[in-house]
Amino acid sequence: MQMIKAHRDAILKPLQTVAGIVERRHTLPILANVLLTKSGADVSFLATDVEIQIRTTAALGVGSEGGAITVSARKLIDILRSLPDSSEVSIGVSNKKATIVAGRSRFSLQTLGAEDFPTVSVSENFGASFTLPQNELKRLFHMVHFAMAQQDIRYYLNGLMLLTDGSAVRVVATDGHRLAYCETELEGANLARQEVIIPRKTVLELQRLLGDNDEPVRIDVASNQLRISFGEVEMITKLIEGKFPDYQRVIPSGYTKRLLISRDVLAGALGRASILTSDKFKGVRLLVSTAELKVQITNTEQEEASEELEADYIGEPVDIGFNVSYLQDVLGNLKSDQIQIELGDSNTSALLTVPDDQSFKYVVMPMRI
Image (cartoon, rainbow, N blue to C red; front, side, top):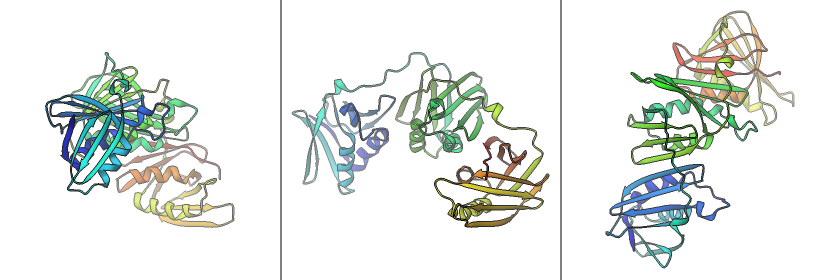
């Protein structure tokens, strides 16, 4: 049976869209495969790791016969990538093997039965539903994703909290040492208050798939599942169970010490100073006084880096230490010319914001140096 006949890149695009979640090692061999389902001219591509499922459809089918197979996602992608750009590719099935033909090249791959492919069951009760432009949803994730925990024993931190409330959509991420918060307003919306935790892998995959355009993304929220639909792509992901920390208690208020400084200038100074840090010690010392910020690092080998920067500062002098990576992460993701840092004392967390923009907040705990 002939399934697909199309240009190489036309097949690669939907295949790469779904294959990003396929793990290289699985207890179930079939999870290394992609499910191809043909119905007339439409061919559906589907991949899953049991927790996340991505499906997309493209008009690549040839012939009227329908059918479905599963084939190794990685091998099929590698074969297509190895072919010349101008290749016309046909994919067929016979004797439980997939045959890929392009010019004089011919490949035969093992298949596994489509009936054994474990698709994710879709929730029947999606509560909140809303639509955002792709670039806006991508921006929200971009502003907080770096603060997500990785493989933390507190499993509810290994993801991103999405909160809908009235016209507001908020996202929050924390690893217990820093917290990033970002929000956007949906004009005319009146969403029920709902709080869910999206797994880390889902967030990173969405950042890869979402475009920098204003095409709509529909998000349907259930108690244990999230469905994200845009263009020809549909992603269904399980949610993390558990109670996310109360971010409002973490974000400080009432600070009177304020530092205003160029983001590029501070990022450059921290980048130079961090050369002397190590994997075990990443502490940087900030000494803030009127019109000046001093960045200082001393490592275990008694080496030292020091740089004085011009800054606009209001308040008493402060001597405070931070993990330099936590500061670099946020500065690298912001696009603003200037940043504002609000401080309490050397033992309290700092609040980093963008001047005249209350939609983003970043809290970082101090460290002893």
